[in-house]
Amino acid sequence: MPQRSGQPAAAGIAKEIYADEVRLHAPEIIDSEILQVFRRLELAGSLSPWQAQQLRMDARDLPMELHQLRPHFDRVWSIRHRITVTDGYYVSLAELWRRRC
Image 1 (tube, rainbow, N blue to C red):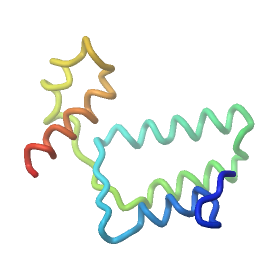
Image 2 (cartoon, rainbow, N blue to C red; image 1 turned 30 degrees about the vertical axis):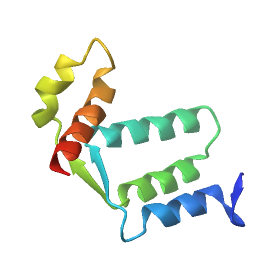
Image 3 (cartoon, rainbow, N blue to C red; image 1 turned 90 degrees about the vertical axis):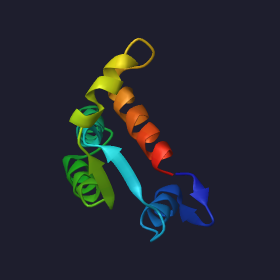
């Protein structure tokens, strides 16, 4: 595993994610995407069932504000020829936050 400041990369990333000043925002679809990755890794034998379960619990507890999909429905559709629908939700949410700042 790559090292950063003498810590495994995952520990460094976790420290950044859980920092008080970091605010994570994502469309609700991220839950499905996260679980799909864990499923794929478990089926491929890269994760044991126990590891997949631990990751699932960690992901569930991430300090993240989830945003509903429906308010982005029209914007996602309008950019469907340039990016996937799933990516469109992230783009639409980022655009919303950029307008608020």
